[in-house]
Image 1 (cartoon, helix red, strand yellow):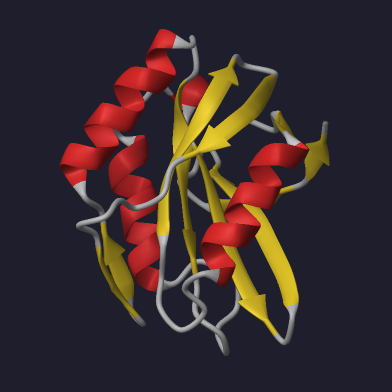
Image 2 (tube, rainbow, N blue to C red):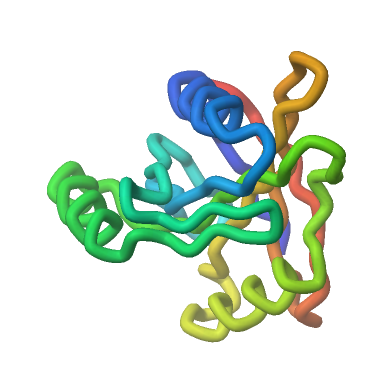
Length: 149
């Protein structure tokens, strides 16, 4: 599976701001958009929420906030297409072993042709970076390029 990933500039800016706001701990949320077997279009991301627990080693989302945010997005015909989270300064944007476990567990809820996408961001030395990942048919992590729109 090698779907094209289209990322709106507004969403990239939002991830940049949400990552920069928490440079020393992880932050994250849900990725919203639309997908089919050939592409994923990303229109928005959520924050982790006001009651989220952020640390250097992970983020526990505020589920109440995410349920409300998801309801609003679904009303706009934007749906769950994946998750994103930041890594703190000094860490790479490559998935950790915990990230890999989460990707495998979450993907089990989807048909292989509709696996969710995962994004890891970081803000370090004044620079924002991000990488997208998907699981392939053998449950291995594959890096995916993205196209801004």
